Image (cartoon, rainbow, N blue to C red; front, top):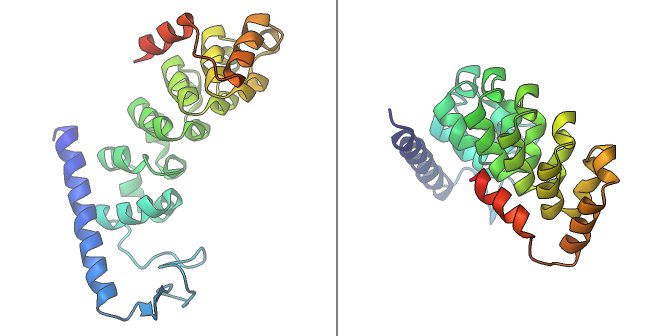
Length: 212
């Protein structure tokens, strides 16, 4: 199945689940006044709470995605089979820290991790060590959140151009660079430019284009 078709299928299952859930809510039962209550303990202001996982089928892609859209951490309740479903996970990791709960095999999957860090650079923390040393993956992460440099391999923390990219996104990312680069005047100069809101230098523009 083509990835685009699979993505559409997952989203259709999600939309159908949302439609059915709205029908249930409109029918009463889970509504108290104007508040949605926890389906298990009755706590208000939430359809579920930290101590009570939602009453859903955790092996159903549509139902699980509906919960993951609200909170990426909800993926922790999914079945092991679903956590290892590559096509489903490619959609799910776009939400919060869902990467934390996928199978070990998928945490080492380059495409899955790239999809996750593009949405949240800090998701790099949950990637395999091999991918934390993958320049393209780390560049994607720091482009979204410069502080993601903290999770990169020591070798990449000493990569001048990658550190420049991280510092440009977040000037404070300089503290995660290698000692040699922290003492480097070119990096400090870029940090000052970024803090001042100046446009990125030509060298970084070329680097960013090459990454895409």
